[in-house]
Length: 460
Image (cartoon, rainbow, N blue to C red; front, side, top):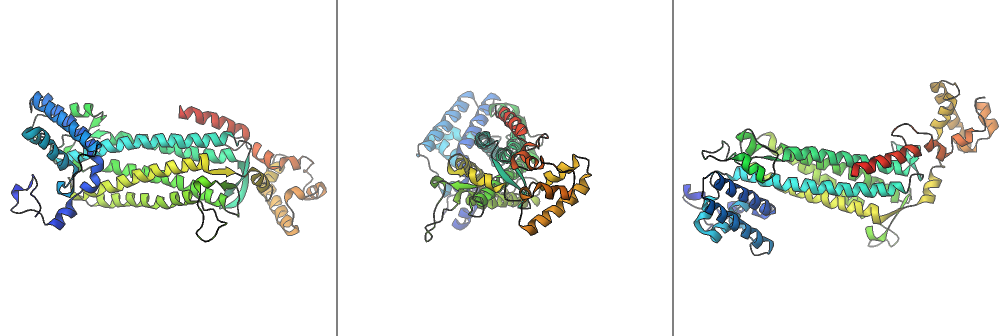
């Protein structure tokens, strides 16, 4: 029979073993143990600071909690299902170490504000780690971009050849996405870093606690102004899961492009052996496992966001046991995002190689310079819409004749419109097509060079 918990004197008998197992969270909230200890140490200091307990008792609690931390780190403390959750587990072990004074730790505190504090301490650490990984990812993107300013790649809309662009410009688009991710997490951090400690179960406490004191000890920026809100708020978790989902959107988009680029149909990149696998029956294949897994794992992060929204949508104030379900999704999201950022960064840095000759050929195989023909005419006084229609007809007849625009003779150009001169060939060459787009934020080489300089300054 399951042993009664410290809260169970109200009850005549212990939980049914199956219900005890169903109710327990120790299997996953053990992830929070060091944060729980840190929060408890701050709480113990505050209890002594305010005279709720003696300074000697506060010191005993602090030292005992540190011993629990060290035991856990060395594998000497491994609580099981009978502990129910990480909070009871730590308090029980603390009491075994320091005696009855350990039972005073929970004075003026509830598991409701305790778990809220632990989760925020955990999440703010993880946010900072993810932001550092984003910086590593951005650095690799910049390094590759700097080497490929004048490498051209077909640009697409609707997955149809549109206009050639600088490969560096293409990669810098992902740099900017990651920059928004980095900034978005900073914004989320500001709402994670608010202390609920001292809100109690839902209504505060009768003890003369000092919530600002514990917030300062734990480096929180603010404290919750309403105790009901403090113990029931999970907006910060939803925001984090949303920000994480957007990170995964960006990684998944890049992954999709790498998968396409590595295909025989595109042949824009070669996958290196360190980041690819083979087929069990087709010896010629080299599979893009890393980007495929990133693309696949994106769905599980989206799922955690949806689950959190569903958990919260019907909860009355204040704390409800449903909120136990927030942690596994948060933990898995953190682990998934960090693993995917690491993998995609390694893939870019070490796992693929751009096929420059193939890229150089690819930008000469289509009509992606058609807009430049229209621009050529417009620059010579032909209204753009008229020029647009003229070029549309030229493309149509060229396709019928099996020609590209670069293959047309000067006489053919001048039959189309007398404004065409010999310089049309330079104007529609892929390199000039790219170089000419020198508007701010465009793919022109000068713009890309300046964009790289600007991006480097963002990383400082």
